[in-house]
Image (cartoon, rainbow, N blue to C red; front, side):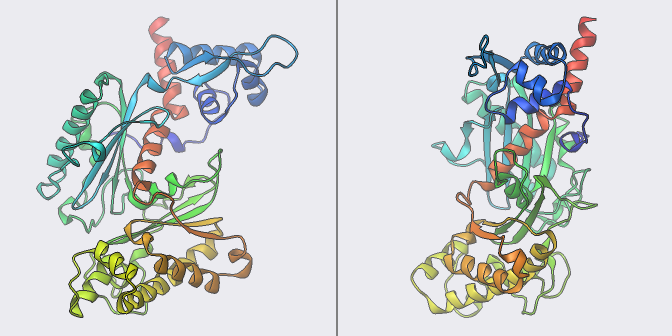
Length: 406
């Protein structure tokens, strides 16, 4: 099975992989600036760069500003040294994006004339993985990419995912996927690392603030279901088994409108999710096909729908306040289809400011994602690239290259 911990391993600074990470996050990096930043001897820093250039991951281009002597050559990641795949998988949709190692999109199923990709979710995880892999290969070839330069992938799923094993737990989108370990299934098709992650965790990664990506935030996916991801100092907080942030299964003071696989009576998802709102409106005689209809009615000022959204926002905000008080984030970011509802977002914001400690609320920004539809796929791309270029993984590549030439 492909391991999922390379990017999270504690590091001794100054390795080949650490130097690559520094080059990736810095706008102006040269051999001399690497030596200054890491404390490495200039000859050692230069040797690390040479190793990265030999791997085809780094090149020199242009020059940094002069410090009084010869202008240093600027180092940069070779973005086209490979490509990764990101897939956003749901019960009724799948979106696949291929990007270079700098995260620039080179292929996107949403941009194709013949429509989005299809995956036989109901046929089970093995058939779905085989279909996903075939789609990765087809997209790469259509985009003129060399499939031997495939570096890895990350798959977003709307369900808890165990860590570090990668098995899917109690998925509401397709119960037959319970216990599926997608990395093991992808290993039948590729030796490259393939990760699977909860969609809300990936939204948290996509919204990670600042150029150094070290912020603390809570991301919430508001759609047919509800999910949450927690980022502490730039790193996902997954908990012991990977279930951290699963606020959707917290009991609330409300009546369930839909069933939930968790078994908790009147959990947040069964009471306040988009799916619950749809079910409640249908029970009241409204012709509502899904969450898009709810949003459309809210935009028209439908009083019943607006009341439903406000009640849902109050429930969600109260549950979120416990997490916000605990981890004191700078931001709560709301994504997913239902985050397009200004009433829902405003109610959650108001409840958080009302329920949280003043010193927590004073430092808190509650906002909707600027691109809620893309947040999950962007997070999967971040996860895939961070994994394939993780310092520990790059160090392994450098060691193997040294052994081959020894």
